[in-house]
Image (cartoon, rainbow over all chains, first blue to last red; front, side, top):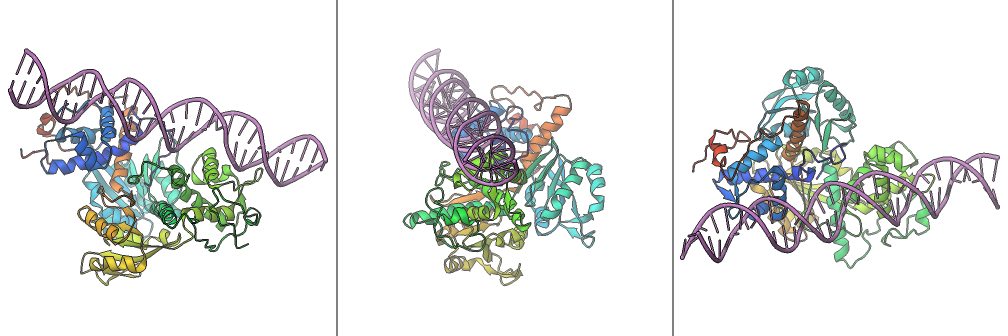
Length: 261
Length: 261
DNA sequence: ATGCCTTTGTGAACGCGTGCACAAAGATGG
DNA sequence: CCATCTTTGTGCACGCGTTCACAAAGGCAT
């Protein structure tokens, strides 16, 4: 997950735990699929399996929304779809702007998952004048100069940043100044925003790095508990000599005492 | 965040808490930036600010790796970069394959963040025969038929799925059968994998939905505490069909409120 | 009606993650 | 060598999230 909100010390919004909110979209997706297959009701067990979670957790999650189930029967699919949608605020239309129409921005613009959930791409914005007017996903790319007017004219409160890291903070500042209060950030940077603005981060390379960690651990385990690292110095920093040279036994003795010195 | 691993009840791998592992890439990025600016040492306070976390948390995180720091001084940047890289397994080369070269897949292939961290795109794979051979990000797209041989020939253990939802599970199964043990899934589906295989999920629309929730809450608060819920009693099982039948515009426009039944 | 069977909703226990606050460690200057 | 000052490393307490396990609730058959 690349995730993480900014500020607000885990205050449970209106009584609904943050962790639960994060799972509601998951339930909603599973329920939508059931709805399309015209399934009338579903038990917590079935739905939990479909959503990939534990059934007890699901029931507790739903209990925060209210008592929407029938004992001995389960949950009414349509009704639950409506309740969760309403809770998530998807019954209203959310205009969003995407800033930075490179490969990723274009992919996001074309991503169908947005439109189908109450999100409407109000505009695509890019700093490159050469991009201006060029149609992407059926919308003409607008120049950054128009950012403020686009935001205010369309009442946009959610912005997506898909610019290079270097431009992200600046774009963020302008979005916020123009009235945006929620930002989805794809740029590999830590954005600083004023109180009251939510930022969620999606970082592709971080996800891969986390996978690499576990992958390495798996590889290390099977090969007879050998040092996790094949002691491959690489570039960088034998430096920090002191500690290293001392043969600093890492945390648990897995650090190859031999440092390239 | 779109995140979430599969199975393994939060076992802390090799003593390092999962939450800490998820933050290591963040620290690494901040440290790399410092390194490029030739900054020799950094205090926990400075680094924490740069990474967007609390300094106490950062120190505790580092304490799981070992005692790499000098009291009264701080941390040696180069040395820490090396230690974290090693811990994450980035000192070795990780060949990855990207399956599904649509908009998103192409964007991922072009994403520089991969190569710069020890990840090497070994191959791009797509099911569309028309795509075969077409160069994307400097690599020729290979057909799905070659999937298995590509995996084994290159010793790929990490796969990225960027296919439509419908194809994801099938692709996943083939990847796993061919030897992949870590999967980064961009398709909006819950993948089921055998024990021992890690799956991380990045879901764009879920992130937006979470933002919408908070956005709605913010809007509701300022407008005189109006209950988020229009006080809809909902006794036993009344509304139920009611909600839907009422012509309830499905939460999303894509769910036909009209139920065939 | 009555009893049985299924499934929800939740009280309670537990474990992980976070943040505080401080003692220990080392650098630095006299 | 000693005093002082900075910054790390961590013991501890607290709160959130997860899971178990079960009583209550409703459907259904008899």
